[in-house]
Amino acid sequence: MDHYSLLREFADSWFLLLMFSFFLGLVVWVFRPGASSHQEEAAEIPFRHEDKPACEPAPAAFANDVKEARQ
Image (cartoon, rainbow, N blue to C red; front, top):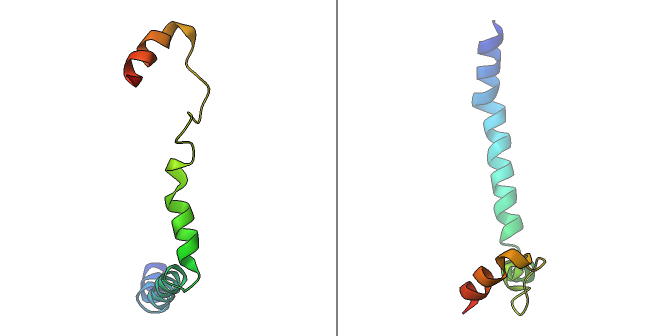
C-alpha cells in the first residue's frame, strides 16, 4: 500500500472520528452551565474603556482633527 492510500484511509476513518469528537467536546464546553458568566465577561471587552480612550492621546499636530471628530 502506498503512502497516499494509507493516509487517505486514516483520514477517512479515525481522523474523522477524532475531529467529530473534538467538535462535540467544544460544543459541550461552550454550552456548559457555568460558561455564561465567562461569555458575558468576554462580550463586555469592547466596552471596558467607555469613559476614556484606551490608548494615549493623539500628538499635538492632530489635536484639531481629533477634536472635530469628537464633536
